[in-house]
Image 1 (tube, helix red, strand yellow):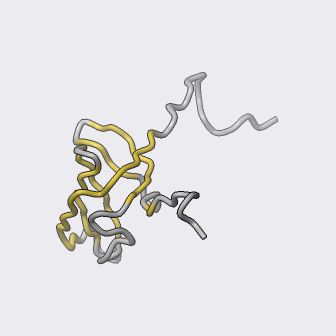
Image 2: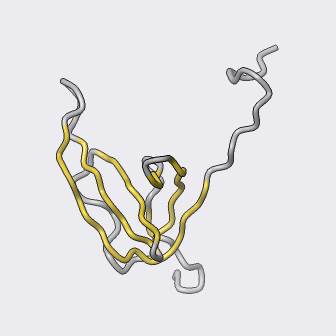
Length: 97
């Protein structure tokens, strides 16, 4: 019986969720990691006073300064990194028609 691919009996840490108003946004790049890989752009975001980093191939993000955003992230030694494809606008059900 297959019990998954993880070895050991370690519990996976749950993903952290960030939510709030996007206060600032800066872009750096493009960076070429290796031959054949698309250009990568590094974004630095400030949400509710906390700093986050996000890396993607997109030249423009689907969010703008002043938007309410939601995302998953992980804490590392280098700072807080937003998971790929998890950044988006937060939808308030009371305002949604």
